[in-house]
Image (tube, rainbow, N blue to C red):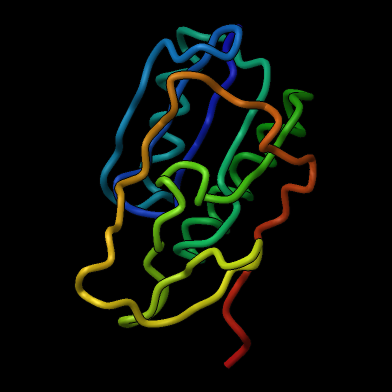
Length: 150
């Protein structure tokens, strides 16, 4: 049995499979989350039995977050799997995350803010960690929308 981590808030979508919280396999998929995530899950579940699902529920691409949530929550319910969520800042060294236009999400004093960044600001890619830290995840899995309504 394996745990799965899905980071779908940017392209490429990154997925890690874990046994006893140690990374055993990674996947990267380009394309629309709605098209590619089900295909990859079909491939993964053909050879692995899932035990828990972890995903990133904020901040980032709203459509990708919504699609991932609905897809993963459905799998969680139909297969009776525990489902957990956390912030994307845990997987890019707490650097800014693309928001809308030229604005970026940033973490300041424990709050997510949106602002412009200067050209010298370092932005790290998302990475699937070698060890899955369960302590950073919550059972509150609803997507978190950080932009105000238009």
